[in-house]
Image 1 (tube, rainbow, N blue to C red):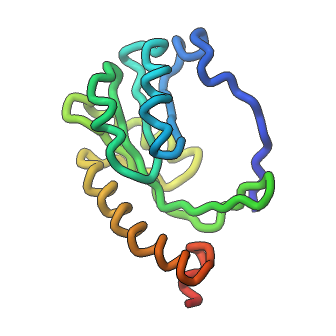
Image 2: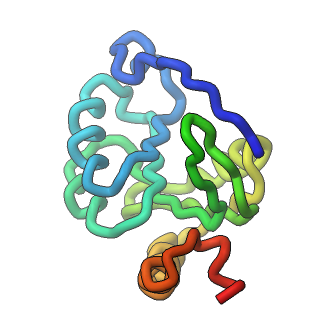
Length: 156
């Protein structure tokens, strides 16, 4: 069990964003587009934006963003128990460019690898995103049917 402590960060402080090397966006899919659009104008155009969330369609909503856009998905599993986040399964985080023009930021995989391994760079991240969507299309209904966390599916 890894306790996560609540710490308030001013994520939209223009001075902070103007010197950021990376904007890591880990929101629900329906929140991503509005959040990125509201923050993009305060970021340097060279600062990559990495979106890590379940779901599809956000990149189509962000086509006009000038910054490099990266997408990611992870198979790490966690659950909330009150104010504590419990990391229940190790996995792998896949990241890559969202659009052809977004370039090679594979060095970010190396940096993120030191924080929460494993991290892999993919030039075609969409294949990993579709794979994750397909897995979730199976897992999510089963967890609802058996009323269990996805980490306990193997017991059913």
